[in-house]
Image (cartoon, rainbow, N blue to C red; front, side, top):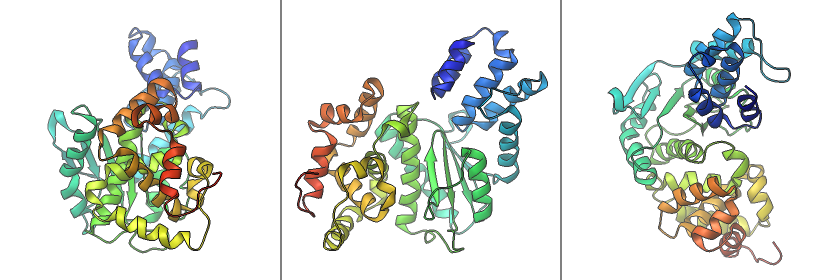
Amino acid sequence: MDRLTRSCSKGRYFATVKYFHSLDPSDRRDPEICYVTGFALMRLHKPDSARGLLLRALDFGFEGYRGWESTGDLLSRISQMEKFQPPLLGEFPGGPNTKVQVYARETDWIRPVMKSMPAFMTRAKELFGAEYPATRFYFFQSRDTFETFYEAMFGRRTREWWHDGTGNFNVVVYCEIDRFGKASRPAGAEPTIADVMHEYGHSLCAMRFGDGYLKAVPNWLNEGFADAIAYPFYKDRIPRSKADLAEFSAKSPAPSYRQMCKELYKDPDVGYRLARLMVDALLEQKPDRIRRILDDARTTGSFEGALKRVTGFDGRYWYRHVAGQFWPMKNR
């Protein structure tokens, strides 16, 4: 029990679930063990798997640990998800080999996204192999429903006004409507499909790395990887980003490397463009480097070290190499 709790308390949710499945069947019925494992599964965004374990804990009166989300609160979040999630619209490829499930109501916006799912899966297989993870996509037509579901799924509200979708362990969640009541992206447009694939890229990277991904990965590499995964759907994204940065650099100073690592979202217009150009440069038309960097960093605990071992240079080099094309680089 101590090992399970320590693992979960340190944010090692994949390890917690793996350890749970190594226990004897009788131990897996212990209410406290059920609570801890259910807690971990909720952090991995697998409410269907967590529900039965949490109900067993509740049936035996185990309400959780002090300072942790209670059994009742976790089950309340699951009820919210069940209440507001859209119906299952499609599975790809279907049957026992299903890799993608899409929960949505059929609209003009969702139809072209659905048609793109096989291409999404082809890209995932190309970069991560045949064993790429299964993922659930949830699409919403109501902003209020999206916000409610998002908070129930992730345990927090959306953080930025421009935040219309996200990808994380096992899931992608996206809204057709922005916070101003307008279409967040034009239906059927190539950039719209690419932006959904970008969020899928986040989910794929998080699953490949595992526990602690968002704490370990620099902001710029996280966003740059997601764009690189979506690259086949962003045909003109690189040249347009160069043109935009040439314009931005004439008006404002460059973000520092530290800002690119830790505070990219404070200036997303510049940060996202610079990040995608940095990753485009370091990949050197070798997309397998995404997987290699993730695997190295997962093993060693250092993305800076992984970058140097895989590309020959650390992140600061790639920052200066790319940003220096638009801003004078001195002591950044």
